[in-house]
Amino acid sequence: MEPTKRVGNFIIFKEKREDILGKEFRAGWIENEKIKNVISLVAIKEVLTKNDEILKKFSEGMREIANLIDPKVVRTLGFGAIGENVFLSREYIRGETIGDILTTSISEKNFMPLDIALFLFSQIASTLEYVQTFKLEGQRMFHGFLNPSDILVTYDGVPKIKNFMIYPILENYPYERTNITKLYERYLTPDHKSGLPVTFSTDIYSFGMLLFEFLTGTPFEFKQGENLKDKLDNAKLLFPYKDSTGLPLSLKNFLLKALSPNPEDRFSSIREMRRNFDAIISEENMDASTFNLAFYMNSLFGIVAEKEDKEIESEVSAEVIPVEVKEEVTVERKEAPVRYPAIEFTAFKVKERRSPIPLFIVSIVLVAVLAVVGTLLIVGKKQPQPQAPTVSEAEIQKAIDQRISELQQKMREDFEARYKAKEEEIKKAYDELMKKATEQQRKELEAQMKKDIDDLKKQRAEAEAKIPVEAEKIAKEMDRTPPAEKTEQKETTPEKVEKPAETKSQEVPPAQPAVEKPATPYAPVIAPPKEGEVVAYGVLSKRPEVVKKGIPNPEYPQVAKRFGVKGSVLVQILISEKGDVIDVKVLQENPKGKGFAESVIKAVKTWKFTPPEKDGVKVRTWVTLPVFKFQ
Image (cartoon, rainbow, N blue to C red; front, side, top):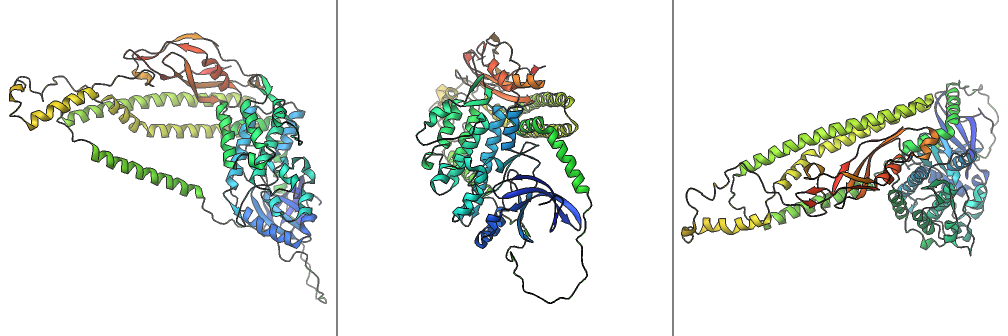
């Protein structure tokens, strides 16, 4: 098909690639003789258009697939015949396939870091899970033949998958199914090769194949009789992780299950697969994001992206040549067969579909509310009647309210200082990146910085919203009366109220009445903490101090050194009753995905502190460390 050729209401600009359906073109969508939008136009292979039954199935299937509305699914816009050809239109993706990403990264020796690669595949897994909430002809939707050409990554760092349910639609057409796999035969799973039914389990195997190839640069090939565990043990990462080129143990165990030749031995569902995969990311303390993926994509395809933007800008502004309208001429009518009368090209309108997830969430909320109400009623019935207090309820409430007010003020001041420091760190980190960025990258960095700051403000608002509840909880915990005192009060006070005649000789002298006993302002007794209990840093009687630093300073990550990237990390550590660092939370990392957080975590876990104490009892506490700066 010639470039710039008009086809119906489309104009062909450039051939992009070929996938299982046919050749894909960048095209313009014409409306009122003007190019309204840039889209992808796929010329469906002739082998799929010869059979009227297949065309009918495709027409119906594409209409349903058009309802897959998700940022990580390539949107189907229309399907049908224009003249002697059948076309599929879908949204145009500014990005590259994972096959192109792998090839380019190997040729330029600019390999994707493991944390970013795992983030990418985590997004792919969540998309596969999302699509399964839809049905086509009563069957749960899935992909069926996941291959490198069907997974794209935008220059903005968003993975997108296309061609869902194409292979399953051809379930009863072996010739056509075999034909569309010719380009990507090496990605056929054992299910395909043995003639087993293709299901979601096939997608699990394909996911494992693509993950293995993307991490090692070697296509996954497994023959009967080979030892899968040995193959995974001998695999080498393109990008070393923790000074090792081998696959991490958690990843090997995941692939061992996903790549089982027997479908029954794989994960029981896409959801289970996704949860296991995300658990690996959490276990390895990896925290890559869309920004990190976008940064990597632009480091690899920055020039290509700028060139494509200029091409599109030129194409969209080009003048559309109107369709020539000839004068009407009366001729003798002859019957001529119409090639595709039943599938005239149609732009799909998406059906409204309510996701089952909100109903699920509503159900959980309702159950939780009923459980809380029921608990309160039961507790309310079982609670004993309040005993005569030694001070008035008004005085107690006044003291609690005052303490709550003080705590709220202190917490707000703490939030103000902390979030202001975080915002400055974000801006400073992005300023360093923008100095070396291109104009296009600078715009994207500015947009990402705005998003990060907006997210930070949202986090701050959410945290501040919890202040009243947290302050009240702390105040009431501090004002709790010890069990021993409650028991004594319960045993003595009622007797004096109910049996004054029998206890007359034991009454307290008038100068020291029981009710007027507290001569000092209300000061509740605080229950002593238990050893190993987590206590707020601010209420410690003895705060922890550094005794020894196994690794005094975090090491500058090799990735950041290579690109000349500066960074900063803010962490919070949990110090045990023995003075060891037993947990680390990353509060802020700028920029992410360059190894700064991992380096800090590795260092601070070697530090030793004096045990934190509260009233002579050794406890645990969270401590926010000063910002680590990499310059």
